[in-house]
Each structure stands twice: as C-alpha cells, then as structure tokens.
Amino acid sequence: MALALVLNSGSSSLKFQILDPEAEATAEPFAAGLVEQVGEPMGRITIKHAGEKWVEELPIPDHGVGLNRVFVMLDEHGIGPSNLDITAVGHRVVHGGLLFSQPAVITDEILEMVRDLIPLAPLHNPANIVGIEVARELLPSIPHVAVFDTGFFHSLPPAAALYAINASVAGQQGIRRYGFHGTSHEYVSQQVPALIGRDPEHTHQIVCHLGNGASISAVHNGHAIDTSMGMTPLAGIVMGTRSGDIDPGIVFHLLRSGMSVDEVDDLLNKKSGVKGISGVNDFRELRAMIQQENSDAWLAYNVYIHNLRKYIGSYMIALGRVDAITFTAGVGENDANVRADALADLEEYGIILDPERNALPNTGPRIISTPESKVKICVVPTNEELAIAKYAVALAH
Image (tube, rainbow, N blue to C red; front, side, top):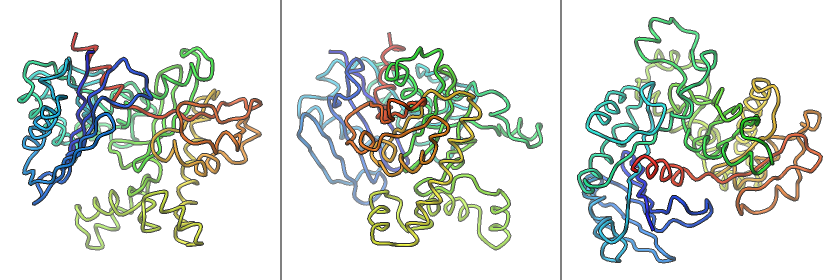
C-alpha cells in the first residue's frame, strides 16, 4: 500500500499524518500526531495509530529535533518511514502569492521562491519552510510537494481580487486578495456536486469553512469567484480570535493612541473576534455561557451570525443562482445552531433547513435541507490532509 506523509508545520508545532491517498474520506489515517511547544523548556509529542496512543514529554528545541524524534518513535513501533512504502511527502504552505497557482514538487529553486514570499506571510511561511527543510534532510530520497493554501483562489476575477488603492503601490507591495483555506474550499466544493446530483461544471455554491479561523467562498462551476479572507487571513467574517473586516481607520486610531504595530497586530489576530467580546473562542464554551444567560456570550454570537449572514447574502448575489450552501470545518460541521441561525428566515430565497436533519450528529457528507428547498444545504467534513496527500502522490510520479 503506497502511503503519503503530510506535514503542517507551525511556528511552535508540527502536525503530521501518514495516510493512503486512495482511502475513503471518512477513513482514519494510518498514523497521525502532533509535536507541540517547540522551542519551549518542555515539549510534547503525541502519536496515534490503530487505536493506540503514545505520548512523550521532552525538550524540543527546534523542528528538526521534533521530527527526528517522531520518526524514531514511529520506527520503534514498526510504522516509520523506513518500515512503510511512503511515496511522497506533502507540505501545507500557507502563502503561494502570485507565483504558485498549483502544487509544486519542491526543489531548491522552488524553496527559494517560497522564501521570497515571506513578507506576505511573515507568521506562517517561515515555519512552513523550516518543516520542509527538516523533512527533506530526513527523507532525501522521497519527493516532497508543496500545496498552497492560496492556490484555489489564484484565478479570482480582478474585480474580486483587487483593492481600490493606488495601483502602483498595490503592485509594488503585492497587495491584493489572495484568500486562504483554499485546499479545504477546493476539496469540499468538489464533493458537493455528486452529493446533490449536479454536474460539477454547472454548480453554483457557497462554501462556509467555519473553524477558529473561518472563511467563505463563492464557487462558480468549479472555480472560485470570491472569498472572504484577503491579503492576510485576518480579513473576512468574525472568527474565534480574529476581528475579520473592520474599518481600516481603527488601526490608525489605535496607533495614534499609543499602541505599537505589534500590539495592534496581536489585538486583531489573537484578542478579538468572538473571544474579544465574550472571553472565549471555543463555541462549545460559548454555547454553555449562552445557556447560562451570559450577555457577552450572546452578543458575541449575534455579531458572529450577523457577519456570517452578510457574506452569504453577498455571495448569493455574486453567483446569481445558488445550488448549494455547504458548511465545513469544526464549527460548520458540528454546531447545528450556527447552521440554523445563519440560514434562518430565508425561505423566500428557496433556502429551507430541515431541523431534524440538521440536528443529526456529524457522520459524513449529508444534505440537511428539506426536499422542497431549491437550494441544497449540505454538511461536508473537510479533509485537507487527504487532498494534500492526493496532490503529493500525483506529482511524485
């Protein structure tokens, strides 16, 4: 069985999966794990395989030490790279800029091109690069493939991609809408036509990727025509800790009031959104607070839903005809209240949610609208790792 290793390297963590790219989307990965607290005095490595879990706590000074130890642990249990037929390594890379519209086999030249994009993603691309460098050193004989979060939105129409600022400045600084979560949006939008019984080339859909980070896309016959995130993942709908769209003058106001650039960055990315209003960003905690009649939690939820509905409405207009509205990611897949409130009172637009179907647990792709609903409402679990694995194996051969 040919397998792929998928790596998602963050600034202080590293997630991985070993999986069969031909497996069903609902299948458990062959092995999966997480390296946490890289660079801190004490880190943790967790590996899961066939119902078993192994945990080690040790200092992990850098990603190289962490990934090396992961491979040793896997080898000790007979499921390491030296024991398995791993044919490709897929790497999630957050920003591909205008250079990458498709996944790419990683060479020294490609890696330098990704490095050149660091100014566009200073918090993400450096960590992605470190993961690539470490993995290529440890697995030099296996092809490595970069899959870009921005790739699906590379061909956005100019009217959607460009900001109305000075064209010369925008060109020099690479300022435009790039979009993110592209691998998820592409994967989910590809599953919907078969689910609702339509030709993929004649399907207009809205995909709502709702997790702690959240984004929405309008997909016209398989191609994205708009998306909520912008030049950075801060733009768009209200998120767990990110503000989403705000008046840009707020940034100037905060800077003039004495806050530093880094303080404003931290405020808008890590201390805003649902958490900024309610104090929590986990929707399970938020729901518990609402049930206890916490007014801040109720306000945060209403701001979130109001913002979400605005984007859904704008994309209905952008698409002209909507065949499906699909929810995915942690909140989208598991929070029936969010789905119901996001689409409440839209019957006149042919959008009719079935409360009983909506209340069912997350068991895989399903339609949760009534038979009479002209617009199909769907829940499709995302599987970015599987999508990355498929790309990696296809390009490795």
